Structures are given as structure tokens and as C-alpha cells.
Image (cartoon, rainbow, N blue to C red; front, side, top):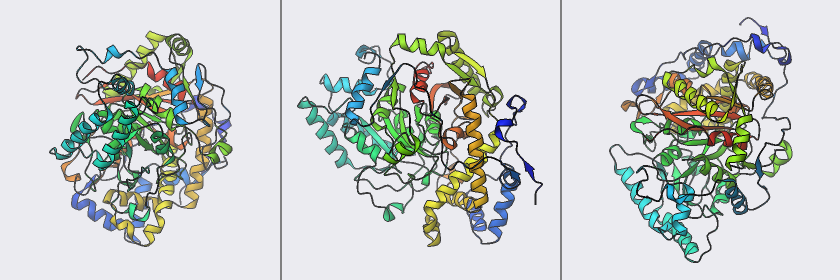
Length: 594
């Protein structure tokens, strides 16, 4: 039995006296190969396994001290609950009850005028991404057609699969289906009736999100046999109604339980910036597909940084929306309280367009959460500059600089200084209390929710077909008790209070997105995977408030480390504050072409 303690009621905590405690390095072996197999065999033994995992929890995160030996006076918060929010300045409201095509038309009016000369001249940089509006311009100017581009994409996917090593972008790719969708889009353009700005835009969908006729495996080899796909997820259906062409299901960590992108079942997705590096995960395929230029946007899910981590490591924009902002019906992970489905894209503007089409709560969440209106910022320069001058950025310096790779905090600091010098943004020093408690509370919450959805398969032995790393995660999750879960939800309420108090002083919290750039892929991890919780700790260092508290966050690329690997800056907003984040992220200095 540990010594009992009691926390002060959160309203009585003197935040000014809070000291930053650097997270302890995770005390766990880096497991691959035979050692990995032996460890999984041991922890799956009925008695010995429980003892080993209990020792691990005591060595890390002060798990028992935080959850079992501390009196937490707050009531549990079993899903994010937000106080009413003031309307954001300089925004255009998108009516959730209108069709996605109508919302997209409104979203287009929010963007600066399109300048075709930027991408359509002989002096354009050779590796400049085509944006959604570049494709739209090309189609409407008869410079190309969706069918012509479909053939190029089919060829590119086949070449990526035949590389040594393969890029492993997709787990499901149907050439006939891609050609059929492209032909229908080409026909609409030839008749002068495109559905929207997204008509003919190619996108990939993460393998945990239903996209008919593809199955949803969640990165496993068997889940699709128990859960057949009969129709699109709501978010996919909204995009399809706008004319989006889906190239297939993108690779991911098995069941989303990983941060690197490692997947022995379908091959580990390679980072386009350096193919011996991980993409980050779990939305590894979507991020790599956008970073490679194969598609201008993709759809991922984020329950523990799974959109933002790979977006940062691959040098693209990744939006994590407010909890429940986008309907989760039709997702494998659709019933949890930390997960969202959201877009990745090459630019902030493209992210906004895809978000406008996907956005909209489920009918149940609109009643229970009373969300603020779905809106986007007006990006006309005069409106933007006024908003930027009054924007207050919150920075917790000790946390901001606590990174594995010093280049990360240096580049992020440089980007903030440019915002300050160029636009007059104000930077305010803040303190975020109980970061260690947040890590523990998130782990228990996502772990319990993940295991809950899989437990029937545990009972019948199906989970023995999972990869070793996933089995390690699930065995750890099985040790969490009801007491642990309720204590984690009490901590969620405390942490929500701290953040709502911070947002009385600032508009956006800024951090690096990850604590390290893309790690190398060990060759011995490719066949059976790996378990490396030290790397996971660095990759997840700054992202958990977005998931445990349901806050919106976005990562934007701002530079590279000394090895040429991308670095991302994260902006965390108020509940339902996606528009304010987009304004600020649009003006974050982009990285030079590398």
C-alpha cells in the first residue's frame, strides 16, 4: 500500500507556485525480435504477466500514486464538457444543416483570391505541391482531367509498391474503382456541372474509417471479417457528395495503438522525406500520401496525436478538431471520448476546405454538447491582420523547450518570433499544471476505451492474431481497474478547469508538435514490430490536451532539423475554436523548400 495523499480542490491551487517537472524517461525495454516474442509470452501468462505489468506501472508515471493513493476531490468528467464560448472574431458561419457543397461554396469565399500564376509558370519550384485550387483550375481550364490524373496516380502507387523497400502507403487499392470515380468526375466537367471545388480531388482514407466498397481492417488482418462495410462513414459520405475521388484505404498502426507507423501486417509506411525513417502514427499512410504529393489531402483519426504526430514528422498540416465537431458514425473507433476524425493536407487553406465539407456534429452530440457554430476565418488580409494583432499566444517555456532534439524548440521559437515581429502577436508566459497527471489520465482513458471495444475478441482468442506491440498495449490496458478509470475522469475535470483558466488570459497555446523528429526504422522491427515507449513518450509529449480535453489543435510545418527532417509547430485552441487557429496557422512562416 502506498502512502495516501489528497489534492487541493482545483479552484484553490496556486498555479503561480507550480514547478515544471521534467517527465522521467520511460523505464521499459526497447523490444524487437525474439525478446519481443518472449516478453509478450510472459505478460500473457495469467499470474506472472500481471506481476510484471504491475511492476512496470510502479516504475513509470507514479501510476498508483496518481490514481489509487490520491484523493481527487473533483467529480468525474466522462467525456469533454465545455463552457459556452464567445463567437470568434472575423469568421464566416457555415450552416451545418446545409449540404456540404453549399458549405464549400461559403468556405471558398473565405479564402484569398486564387492566383494561377503562382503554380502555372515556368519559374515555379519543381516540388511545389499542387493545392486543391490548383487542381480545380487545371480541370476548369481543360489543362487536364481527373481521368488523366487517375492514371498517373495508379502508376505512382504501383511504383511506390515496387520500390525497395516499398513505401506501403495503402492497404486497399482498387484500380477499377479509382478509374470509375475519375470517369464520372471527368464527365461532370465535360458537361460543365462539377459538384464543388472538391470535384475530382483525390484523397485517401485511413483504414479505420468506412469507405465503401473497401473493407475497414483497422490495420489488422481479421477485423473486417467481423465488421463488414456496407456504406460510407458519415464524413466520407459528405466528401463523396462533393465529388472527391477516393484512391483507397491508407495504412496505419494496427488498431491505432502506436505512434510510429510500424505495421508488420501491411508493411511499415516510409517517410517521403527520408525512407529509412518512420512517418509517425497512427495515421501513417494519410500523412505520407500527402507529403509525397500523391494527394493534396487525406482523412485520418486522432485519439492520441494520431493525426498531428505523422503530420509533423512528414511536414504537412494536420488538424485535430474539437471533440464531436465531426460525426464519427462509421468509424471503428467511433464510440470513444478522446478520438476525432479530421483532415490532413499540404496547406492550411486545403485543410479548411476539407474541414468545411466534413464538418458537422451528430444529432445526439448537437443536443448534448451544444456546440458553437461551425465556422471558418475570413482570410482577407485586412481582417486577418486586425485579428492577428490582437491574438494572445500562450507559451509554457520550460515545457516548450523540453525536447529530445534541440532543433525543434529553436525552429519553433524562430517561427513565433517572426509572428511577433511581422504581425504584432502577443506572447504570454503561462503555466500548465499537472502534466504528468494528464499523461496518466489519457493513457487509462484511451486504454480502457480501446479494450472495451475488443474485449469479446479477447475472450474468444481472436486477439492472438494481433501484432506483438498491440498485444503489449492491450495487456497493459487489462490491468486498469474501475478505480483507475474513474480517477482518470476526475483528473480530466481538474485539467479542463486549468485550461479554461488559461484561455481567459490567452487565445491559443503554442508548443512544438513533437519532442523529436522522425526516428529511424530498425530493420529488425519490420517483420514483427517493436515496442519502444521512450520514443512514444517524446512523440506524445505535447499532444494530450487535444485528446483528453477534446480541444482543437493544428500542426503546421515550420522548418527542418540538421538532418533535413520536418518540424511542426502546434497551436491548441479554445473549444470549438478551429477558425481562430486557422487564422494564426495561415500566417505561421512556412519552411523553405528542402
